[in-house]
Length: 241
Image 1 (cartoon, one colour):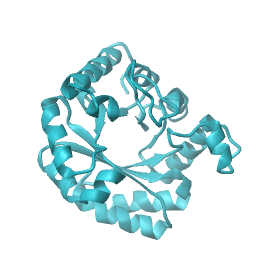
Image 2 (tube, one colour):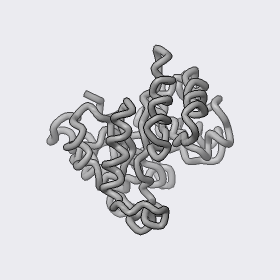
Image 3 (cartoon, helix red, strand yellow):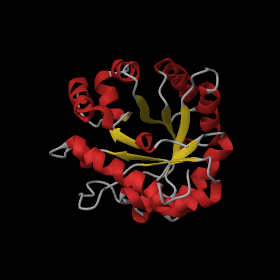
Image 4 (cartoon, one colour):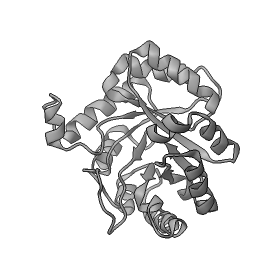
């Protein structure tokens, strides 16, 4: 059973380590799990990840690795020393690439859980069609998730709209991480497939990633605590995931 507090992952989608430190300090004990994505990792490298881990925080390193199997395996091996908790690869890289990532991670005692990104939450059916994929978004998510499971991944990243389907397909032990979560009244931004925190948790999401609704809030801590409260309230009425 994952504590409700650990189900909220705040996205550190900021340009500098100093901006990230200020955000973490402001959120204080209300948040212990943070996402470091491409923007911050490209700007600051692994030092900030080490800093977050040294402070007792959990880290979701969202790099969406996508390359030939050997290159991805080597990248995962390089990340192991960071002791991150979650690390993403892109399911579109295929079965062998994901297997290589999982096997590389398994070579260490404190290995990250490998999650496969199914279809970006900014995609609609039309966007998917423009890339040459005829499947509907939900069908493609299901297909990529099955491939990820076969590769040994610990779970997937999907929008909240596919969570209930995935939970039925893969059971309770499969991690489903949901980005693009938007509390009621928040702007969708560049996200196409969104849901409110309670909806995502009730559907069976394991983790929720929230960025701008917290980081752009006038009172960031209050915004995070409101989402935590919504998660806890929903879990108290739901079957544990």
